Structures are given as C-alpha cells and as structure tokens.
Image (tube, rainbow, N blue to C red):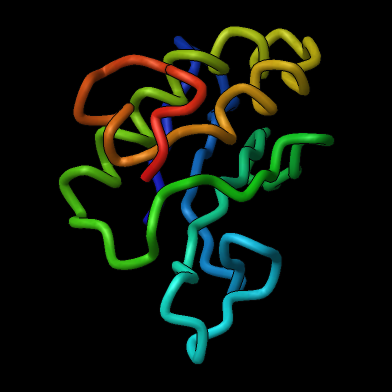
Length: 120
C-alpha cells in the first residue's frame, strides 16, 4: 500500500509505502514461533520528474502487523506523511523523525499520536 502527495505546482511528490520484507519481532519472521508477529516496514521516496529516488535512512521496520486492516494502514501512511513531507520536499534529513516513526503501531495510529512503547 502506498500514499503519494504532490508538492504545489512542481514535478515533486513524496511517496510513503508499507513493505512486507518478512520481518518479525526478533529479526526475520518465524511462523513456527507463536510469540512472533509478521511486521511491516515503511519506505519513503521522493519522486522528481517521474524518477523515484529512495530517501537515505528512511526505511524502517515498524510495530504494525502485516495483517492490519487497510483503513488503519492508510491512516498510518497519512500520519507519517504529515511528519516528513516538508522536510523531504526541501531536501532536509528525516533520519531522526524516521527513527521515531519506527515505533508506529496499530494503537498509536488509532490514537492519532506517536508514542514510544505503544506496542502492537
């Protein structure tokens, strides 16, 4: 799932998307471990004149399970976009913001706020 936002009257867009790379709570997802949960990663890119450019230090595993409802996933992408849009468009670093956003969970999305420790 992805979410794009175009910058005013320019050819620039920001792309935030969920990716399933087979990650779990302790690294690679282990379906044989009943305690493990398959988790999503977010990736952020700049699209400039049709070219997709991945942003450095803007891809992190989250606390959001792979099987999360699409409505909640969309809300999470919108929350992340609000945090990073202006910085990406203007070429500023988003590393620290992305580190904080890696704590995003279903609970934090439903609450509409970023809270470390708002696990799954």
